[in-house]
Image (cartoon, rainbow, N blue to C red; front, side, top):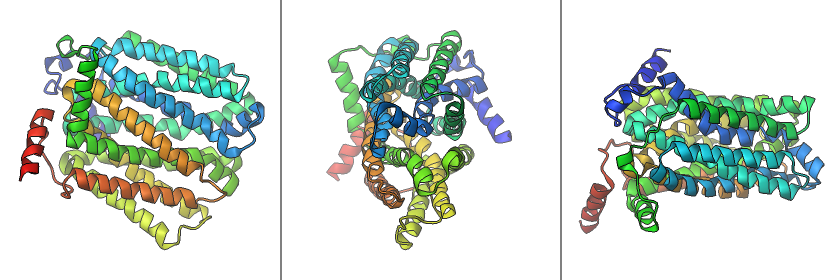
Length: 439
């Protein structure tokens, strides 16, 4: 509790990037973390609460193929990826708050359509709209955090935000299962509608604008292209965005396969939410560890070491021959290790990607979010739809994604891992890269 209290007190210190503005920030540290976590968790809730309902949705809307039910997840993520590309630049131009509220309104519209859908195609179309609307709170929440913090402090803040919002995937399947015991799958969308309305009201009443007027960018093709080029030409940002895409694919592949694995392979039935939540809980421990250790070890030190730990877990499964149906405890132990590593790697990779992007945080967050979500949805769909009655495709897919992540990080860091570096602006980074290339 001391660690958490110290970190919360750090959130309001005036020496952060926002300067004296931070000292006048109306939200307490606890409220700031809670609100940002809720905004970012809307997508996790919109995915995980649906998982127990997929079989009922399939029966209700005439979906015969079990793998086709996964489209309820993947199509949502497609809309989510597209929406991030839109709302980030808009938030750099008009500030954070107006686009945030507009996106929540768009999400509410999609949720109402989903609840009233009479066909599977109609449900998928509504899920696209839901995903596009949910992109606003996700990408803008990251930009708001970047408006106020940078470097290791941003990683610490993101760790606590992630630690709070991870509660959502722990409890969401159980909540969905509980709703199904008393009502139909459409009631799940009523829950999502209530959460969106509540978070919108909270943000309206309490959240101030964090994008200073002097930092706002013109909304023109030239300005947007310039911001996109900064992201693409900054080695650190581009490398960690690509690496994050592989890691996000790891998460999506598990989410899309989990209901079939725990229900059909291991026969857990209604106990599926317990197994799912127990594995997700390891990300909370990882986020707490990261928040306390990142200042000492640095973002690169802790995330690179954890990446090797994840590879070691994959090596154990490879040594066992990637069994089609390993004992349940072995599989859960493997996934718990994977998501413990995930919980440390993701906030640091996100912070490393955003570190040089202070003046284009919204656009950078949207470009990064578009790629990572799109790549994660593609990788996750490919692995998830490889399900054939066992866990081997998932375990092999996770191993390949860890290997790809390591390869990208090695290239990004010029094969020098776990070394602390001073953050540079995109302009200085470009000069450094040119000098290195000439040498």
